[in-house]
Image (tube, rainbow, N blue to C red; front, side):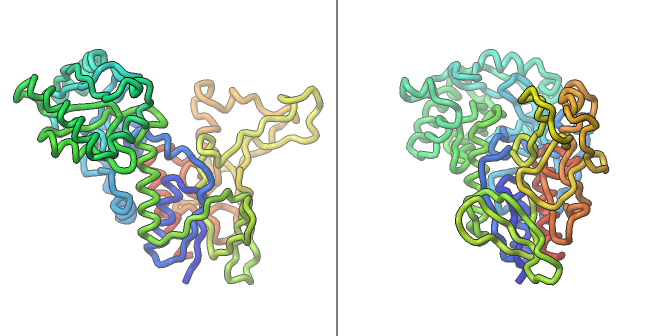
Amino acid sequence: MRHVVVVGSGVAGTAAALAARENGAAVTLIAGHTGASVLMGGAIDDVAWDDADAEGPPYPLPRRAETVLEALGGYIVGDRRALVAATTGILRPARGTDRALLDLGPLARKTVLVAGNPHGSWDAASLARSWSASPHCDAASLSFLAAEASLLRHTEERSFCDADIAALHDDPARLAWLAARLRDVVDRFGHDVGAVILAPWLGVTHERARALSGRLGVPCGEALGGVGGPSGLRFEHARDRALAAAHVTVVQARATRALHRGDGEELAWRTVLDVQGDPLDAHAVVVATGGLTGGGLEYTPSGAYFANVMPDHPRPLLRLTCDVPAELGAFGRALDDASSVFGAAPETHAWPYAETPLLDHAGILVDEDGLARGAPRGLYAAGEVAAGAPHTWLAALIAGTRAGDAAVKG
């Protein structure tokens, strides 16, 4: 049996582990820390959502990506683009959604109630006005109506964040109470109500939008929230359930190094952890540690930024936080050391000062299956740690499945 180690437990690492396991490999996933995947707001994108091509018909998902989505559950990626309302006051397309979100796409010519009293970023009256002014609203012939409703049961809940309130609705009794309050609101507006949209409050361990819709008899769902909301927590719960069902071994640690033991070794790759215990030996390693946001890449400015002494040598702008024999680069070429020991000015490599920022594109140079360029056979990278990878949830999932497949097939 082939053995594969996956470093990273975000969407790319999870997809790689599930894909490798489905191919019959024994898989160990190293879950080191919370990464960028837990920051997702619930929209599933394949490209930047405001890309000019985002309105076109979506491409079919690879079968392996569909299999991983089915294993995770809780997500819808269909043959059309969804339309979601964000708490920032805009409507925008998405390739798919967390099932807790309300997809406005099927609600053409319907009235959507924006329910709730002001709380945090949720102001029903202001949001209804902002969403109504969107070109997407006109195109879909939607209408939004603010519906004042006290949906918080206890006074102290006014200070809760969205994720804490969402966790309350994991309780069926609390969800039934919410449904009763919303029933009063819907009855107040009559039969013209096509759906109800709420703050990001519908569950943490599972999405609760479908259960709420069933109780109310009207489609209900969340608006797209900001980073760090309940959708990222729902991903973590879905991931843990899927990995357990697939019999993936999960190790809570950080990988500090992956080294090649030599072509003569059957298990040619050894992964060293930051905890006591034996290192992990495997036929292949998939690095899915995330980019700068997720902690897989570290910005390394010159020592001159920290002290009034001359640095002893120049160095590249970035380094990997897990030491692997891979080549860092961007735009198809390796990263060079800075031409000066004082390093490069960071503003020359970051948005908005650069049209194509190096920091948005740098990572491990890989081929289309995630095989690391210049490394011994058996090292793969997926997700934002790979050079040139789109910084989107669905792109990371697809890249993870490809790397997981390739790691088993060798």
